[in-house]
Amino acid sequence: MAGRRWGGSTATAAGVAAGVGAAQLGFAYGLGIIDWAPVDTVRVEAAWFASLAWATWIAAVSTVLGAVCAQRLDERGSDEPPPGGVLRRATLAVAAAVGASLTVLLVAVPARVATAPHTSSPPAVAAGYAAGGVLLGLLAALWALSVRAAATNVIITVGWLWLLAVVSVVDGALAGRGLNTAQLGIWQISADRPGYWLRDYVYWPGVLLATGSALLIGALAARRAARLAPRGLGAAISGAAGPLLVAVAYLLAVPRLASVTPAQVSAHLVAPYAVLVGAAGSVLVAALAQRAVRRAAAGQQGSVFRQRADEPPLPPADDPTPVGGETTAAAPLPAVPAPRSAEPTDPAPLATTPIDPASDGAVPIGRRAPAAESPDAASGEGPGQPSGDPDKPTGPGAGPKTRPGHRTR
Image (cartoon, rainbow, N blue to C red; front, side, top):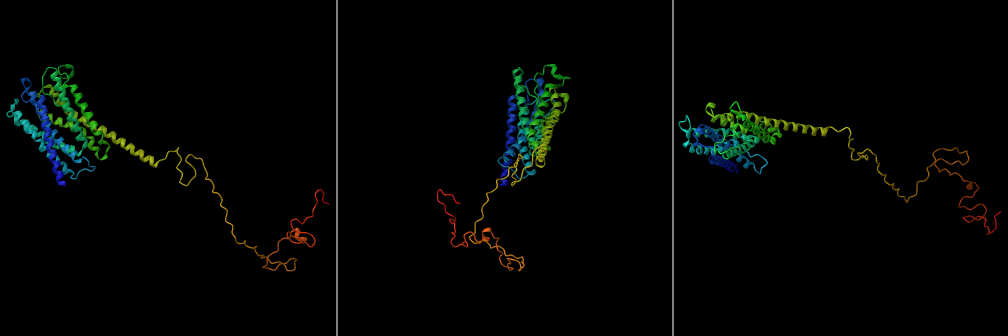
C-alpha cells in the first residue's frame, strides 16, 4: 500500500510539472512574452535575453509547482504527514524535475528560428538555459517541500509575475506598440518619461513595484507558519524563495550588462534587492509572531500561578461563607426528641455515706435514704393517704361543703 502511494505521488509530481511548464510556455508564446524572432530588428538582442530569462524561470517554477502539488494532494485528508521524510521529499523533487524537463524540448524547438547575436547555435543555448532552470527548480523544490511558507511564497510570486506580464503586454498593445516582449518582474508604466529614470539605467517605478511586492508577499506567506516555533526559522527566510528564482534567472540570462537595454539593466539590478526585501518582510513577521506567542504564554502562565490582589480566594466546598464576603450560617437542624422507654427509670442511688447509728433517723449503710418529709407528712397526713381521724373525709372533695349563699366560717 505504501509503495502504491509513493508511485502515485511520484507520477503526480512529474505530470503536474510537465503540464504546468507546457501551459506557461504556451501562454508566453501566445502573448508574445517570449519571442525568439521579433519583427523589429532593433529589439532582437533585448528580445533574446528577455526570452532566455523567461524560459529559465518557467522551467524552475514548473519543477517547484509539480513537487508542491504532489505533496499537498498526498497530505490531503490526513492530519499526520506521510511517511518517508527526507527521502520522500527528494523523490518528489526529482520526479518533478523529470516532468519539467519537457520545457527543455518546448524551448529548444521554437528557438531554431531565433536570431541571436554572438550565438552560433541558438536552440542549444536556449535548451541549456531551460535545463539550468530545471536544476534550479530542483533545489528550490527541496526547500519548498520542507518549508510550507516557502512553497506558498513561490506560488503567490508566480501568480503575481504572470499578472504583471499580462498587464504589461496589454498596456503595450493599447499604446500602439503591439505585442512586445515583457520584462520578467518589471512593468514599465511609461518608459519615455525622463523623470522615471535615475542616471538613465534605474527605472524607479519598477524598483518600487518589485521591492514592494516582494515585501508584501514575503510577509503574507510567512504570517501563518511564523507562529509555530519549530517552523520559525524556515518561515523567517521564506520571503526570499520567490524573488530568488527571478534573480538567478536574470543572473544566468544576462551575464553581460553592457549588451542589454537600460530597461533590462534596471530589472537585473533590482532583482537581488527584491530578494533581500522579501526576506526582510518574512523575518519581520516571524519576529512579531514569536513575540506575540511568548507574551500569550507568559500571560497564561501568570494567570494560573498569580492571583489578583483585589479578588478574594475561593472558599472550600464545605465553607458556608460565599465569595462576596457575607457570612450566612446554615440553618440548624430541628432537634429530634429521644424516644421514651417503656422500662422504669433507674432507682435512686444508694447512700454510700455511713451515718451514725446513734443519731435519729439512722439508716443502715446500703439502704435507701428516706425522702425529706413534707409538712403534710409531718402531721401524719400525706396526699392521697387517710388522716388520723377516721370520720374526716379524704380525697379531692374532702373539704367542708358550703351551701350556696352561705359563707364559710
